[in-house]
Structures are given as C-alpha cells and as structure tokens.
Length: 451
Image (cartoon, rainbow, N blue to C red; front, top):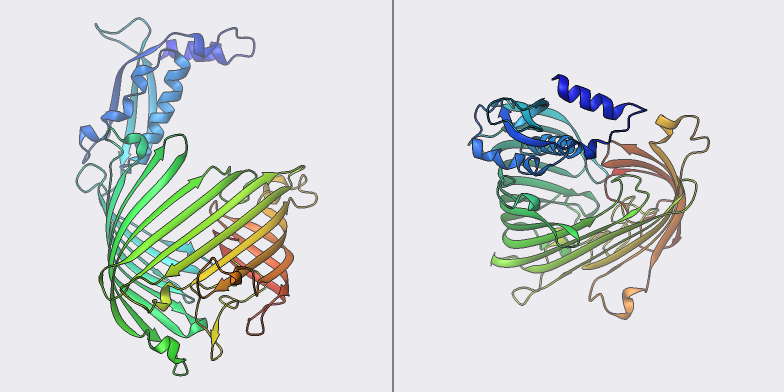
C-alpha cells in the first residue's frame, strides 16, 4: 500500500513538517476475517469507533484499540491489523480499508502451572472449551492443590456481554459448581464447601471507575477436625450445614502498578448476608485500603488498612467458625504467626468477630539500582510498622484500641510476575499479649495483598 507508507514515512521523518493528526482520513470499510465458530454480530461493535475517525492518527489509534478489544472478546489467540487505501467505485478520496485477521482458539485448550495465593503456592490445571455457542461463551474445569491451606475443584460457565451496547460496562455472567477445602491448621479444623455460585460483574465510570460484583452462593459447609485434642468451642461447629448467601463487592483502583505502586489508591469492600435459607446465618463486612504517595528519588510512602466484622442475625446466635477473622502473619500483622494475634481457648486460636490492622511503609529502591536497572527494578527495600487488634464483640466499644498488637522491621521484596510479590522481613514485635504466638526474627511471605 504505497500511499499509506508514503504518508506514514513522511510523518515519521525527523525533518517532516506533517502531523498525522492533520492528515484527513476516514474509514470506508472494516473487515474481520478468521471467524469460524463466531457469529458476526459478536464482533460488529468492534469497529464503531473506527468509523468516527477523521484523521490518519485517529485511524491508527482506533485500529490498535479495536485490536485490543477483539482480544478481550476471548475468541482469538492472536489478531493482526492491515491498513490499505480504499478502492472501488464507492471509495472516498481519503478513505481507507482496515482488515483484522484473527486466529480463533482451538475447540479444546488445556493448561497446567503454579498459582500464587495468600502465603501459599498451589498446582493448578485447567481444561477449557472456548466460544462454544459463538458469542464468547466458555466452559472450564479447574482444579488446584496446595499442601498448606486450600484445595478446590470448579466447573464454570461464563458469558461476556462486551458486544452489547453496554460495552463500556464490560458486563459478564458466570455460573459455577465448586468443591473447596480450606485447612485451618492453627485451629485444628478444616472446612469443605460443596455448592454453586452465580456471579454478575460489571464496571461503572460515572466520575469514578468502579468494578462491581454481585453473587449468590448456595453451599453445604462441612467442618471437620484435624486432631482429637480440640476444644469444645470448635467441636460444636462440626458437621454439615446449609448456607445460602448473597455477596456484593466493589473495587476502586487507580494505582499505577499492582506491585510496587508509586502512586494511587486502592479501595475494596465486600459485604455478605447469609440466611436466605439453610441453617447458617450471619452478616459480614470487610474493607481494605491502600494509599501510595511518591516522595523523592524513588522513595514511596505507603499506608494500608483493613477492617472486618461479622455479626449474628436474629435467626442464630452461633457464628460459623470458618467465617471468623484471623489476625497475624506476614500478610496482615508481621512479627506474629498466622492467626497468632487473637482470642484463644485452651491454647487454640478460634478467630474473632472483629479485627482491624494497619501498616505504614517506606519503600526505597536498591542501592546502586542504576547499575543493574533491569534486575533492580524487581526489588525494593521497605521499612514497616504494623498495628492491629482483634475484638470478639462490637467494633464501636472501648476495646477498639485496648490490647493492641504492633511490630516493626525492615525487609527485601521481590516482584513475582505482575500480580504478586515475595517478602523476606526481619520483624520485631513491640506490643503483644501473653497468649499471642510471635515470631521475632526473619519471616517469609508470598502473596498479592498485604497490609
């Protein structure tokens, strides 16, 4: 396409006096090839913005945006873009034709690998049948195994609605059948959940970009013991129970990075109401916040906080032990073992109705980071101070600040992929209770959400 090359070359030349934004252009036709199982209407809205472009720069930018949109539809494993001058009897004088060549996913895909959780790693396998009905609908069978806490098996069907007029809201529906096992070794019990989950998620951007998720879960929860010497306050929760709940979560995140953010805010809130049926009833609310403030020479101040509360309803006076909160560990209150800062019965931690935890950090780059730029960018040094507490009754009492736990220290953090990080910290507990399980010295952690 000699004409477009000539225009692009002239505009990219150092001595060029042309601005691509001043070169008039329009899109006459858009072609999407490679559609085998996919219906045409699923990709039709991809080209809406292209037809609104009125200069060559906008045409190129919108073509790249459309390519990204086609990837998000979940039907192509790769997409290429071809731009050419418009030809034919109805071609306009400054018209172009844009062709997107896609390569659809195969009918059956599989993957196996590792997954990072909250201070645990797991083996994960997945078998997926993509785009089964021609409009992005997919089914997957997922399984994960961890030798520390959680194992799960899930059969999931999901359908995106990105191709509708609500494209900007990115709505998606999913239905899952799951079996999940969580081990609470510190309290000598495990919880096995078997049930189904209905989820609807969407984005809203009315002044603030938010991600919403509304879920309904119906499951059988079975609590079992891991050894014989378990106090009665845990034994009374044993056996299968039916839980029916609705859950709503909302997330605001404008950070410039998920790991080692230098600026921005993360706010997350989750609310549950259980008691729509079955014999488990409670209300639960958790909130998490993170603020990053750039200082100087790569130094960043970070402030984190998390609070959670679970309460009885009129239908019950016994809260499920698997829904109580555990404070302590490298993800929440450094310098304490997991669940080591909270109420204890007969030497066994049992979780709390309410907890709160805060952290202040000073992040710094490695010394001589300029010498090893590519490697050093994955490391940070941080100085931290954590404060937290657990409460077994109402949050708004005088006990909110009583018996607080705190610790400080410093450590080295490594960015593990773009979502998780590894920390090796030296911790010094400052305030503790006699029943707490502290860890004075080095503490290792891996995860994606820290305090």
